[in-house]
Image (cartoon, rainbow, N blue to C red):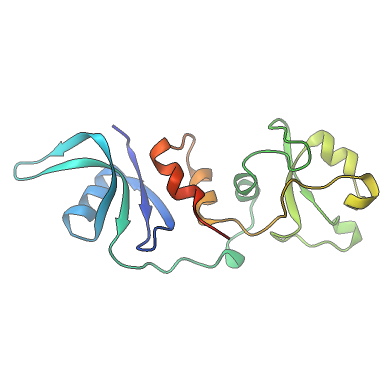
Length: 168
């Protein structure tokens, strides 16, 4: 039985991950509905509830805008799928400023990408055009699903459709 449950907003946007116990409380209070159920059941003296894997809130919860989300190494790595944006490597990951700080670049979602150490050293304080490199995708603020991925070591397959359909 999955011990963590993905919580979706009323708009099906990922909001959080909670314990199975908290999810069942939300279901029993009528504050959420089950979207995906697991194979097990949870029994009480008076009720039987299918073990939830994904639930959706019945009301809209205001989520902070992506521009105001805190910039952190963990969030950048999650946004970029724990892959170097230059070569695709998953080893020795660092953070790189696309426009180097020494050249006036800022530390913002639009100017930082995940980079492996060899690519970061190769680029150094140069602009991408000077070394013939380019990131595999344009850096943007993270999607809500990126933070859910960052909070979990393993993401259950049942969560993937709800994490990947979110657009920026």
